[in-house]
Length: 335
Image (cartoon, rainbow, N blue to C red; front, top):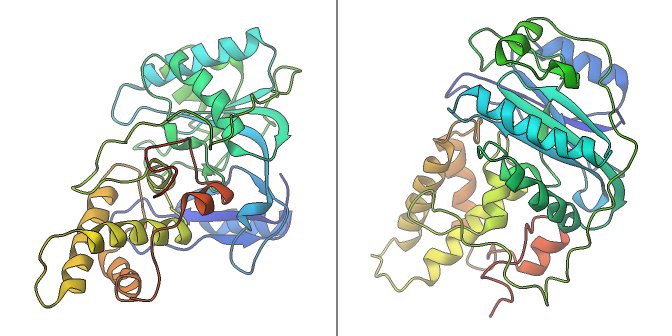
């Protein structure tokens, strides 16, 4: 594990005030973080490493794109289905001798697939699209491929489980039954994860987005307003970044401000209410936006809504350059 890196401790209790992401600068700092929060809160760290950091967070443009994070989450479905999907994808990786590691998250499975360093996350997404149909039970999370994604730290407790199971590394031979894996996860496993395979993935090159066909269809609406696939991907996670939240509010503001609907004298107040209600619907999803707080959201969104000189929705070019784009959608090119 490389340092510095981002970490986050998220409460499993609803309506509990949540902490912000922070940076640990060394192995000792990482250890201190775990000693403080493990067994009390859910402990996460960034999927990717970064070359540069600001005062409070990683510099997105410096991300080292050398892996694919696969998150098999049951989301209310039987855990057996997640296990079956994990085994199907693992079998494919073994057949091609790709490098990978397996983890049990306490409520699902994580697989890290390692490849050559890329300068375009869309290349890694192309490989993800190749794997996605293999998981026939639909437990493979589409939001895993993003530069700011978090993953649960191994050998920390998943506080969302009734039995307080640990996130642990797994061997291929452990992928037998759910009961066997749960028994293993009742204690931490401090042996290092096994890196299977010998071939780093040579990520397929994604076509230039300017000439590519439409790759992503419109996502299902969470509330009443449409949402861009890239913003949906960056928001439907445990702890969206501040920038992703700002982009979402800006997108909603632009949609509503351009709407021909007749507002009364306090147009901005009505727009603010609609945006907060939309975000509230997003936060109601299981395991999403765990630090949702209506008062805090309204406070920050107010500045975006009431700034008439700026704060418009980010352009596609900006979203692409910052690693948000998940494929060409109906919005590109902007008119």
